[in-house]
Length: 134
Image (cartoon, rainbow, N blue to C red; front, side, top):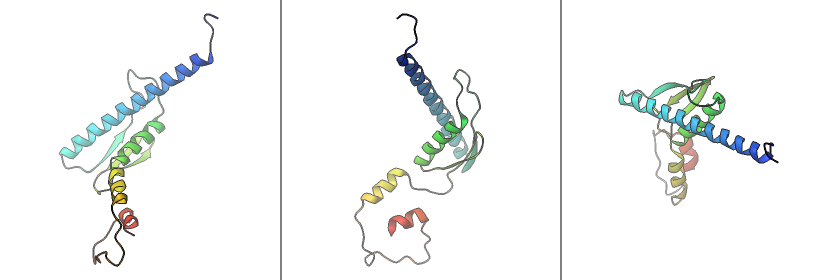
């Protein structure tokens, strides 16, 4: 049947749209990384990143999904990233936060018994690390 519509055609179109959206999200993430580098050069440790509603040359996308993608990738890199409004992210790197790789490495480290662990008085251990140490 020539000129007819098939399920395979629809699935191919959906896959192409999904791929283009991922490319758009990656492009926006790269823009965010560039802005972080620029701000960090001036010793700024917190910034707002605005996701544009439209990216020229790209098909329409959902800002909420782009925000979720960018936040996930930034958090994986050790940043604190939160959506504070539609298309607006707050990115903070002022507090050192362990990356997923650092956490995984610490889990592979040999366990130290509680009695052999040195007592630390007056040292404040961040709560994510406190959970790992206990």
